[in-house]
Structures are given as structure tokens and as C-alpha cells.
Length: 166
Image 1 (tube, helix red, strand yellow):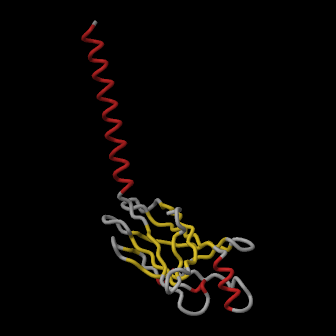
Image 2 (cartoon, helix red, strand yellow):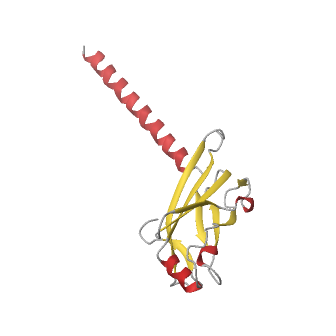
């Protein structure tokens, strides 16, 4: 009777170890997935909403394929969501590669550039990237990043991740 109980216990431990190994492998593979990283170049002249953004493939292993970026502007009146200018983003971003894009937001403030800056300081930008899963290109992943705020403490000012958020 003791040997049957010991075999059952050994079988239970073996199954538990197998599930833990499968879970660790799945977590490891998920951690290697490509993830877009966003940054902004400086706002030198004109509208703060006309900034050029950079998207980089932060993965060391897999490319970002068929990346589509949508930009959302919140913080004033109603949210405004637009698609980024896709022709500047290649169909495939290899590991470590980057591309630039702009978010063609409509003029948020009608009037002087000072009004535009005031609206920009009260606004936040979010990015939603959609791209193909590596190896299984029939599935798509979605990555939401933000908020990004206009940081006027940097020279020239640029859109940066909101402190404490990301």
C-alpha cells in the first residue's frame, strides 16, 4: 500500500513540475516577443502636435511585421484618434531598427501658436500599435503605450512618457 501511495505522490510531483516547466517556457517565449518603443524628437517650430515620433523594435530576436500605429490625443474637449502616416513605416522592422512617423492631429486650437501650446500642455498622447505575431502571422498583437506629455523642461521640448506611468 505504501508503494502505491509513493508512486501516486511521485506522479503528482512529476505532473506539477511539467506544468511549471510549460508555464516557464510560455512566459519566456512571451517575453521575447517584439515590442515597439516610442520616443519623440524635439518640437522646434510650429505646432507642438506636428512632432516627429520614432518607433523602435525593442526585441533582440524577432521582427515587427505589418506594424500599424494609431495615435490618440486626450485631455481637451473630446478624444481624437487618428492613424499615423503609415508610408514612412516599413512593412518589417528588424530587431533594433527604427522608423519615424507623425500623428496628423487636426488643429486642436484655432488661433495663435500660444493657444496651440496651451492645448498641448493640457493634452496627452497614447499610441496603439498592431502587428503580426512572429512565426504565426495570421494572428495580431496589440500594444498600448502612453500617456506621453509635452515636456517643456527639455530643450527643445518633446513628448515624453508621463513620469510614473511607463
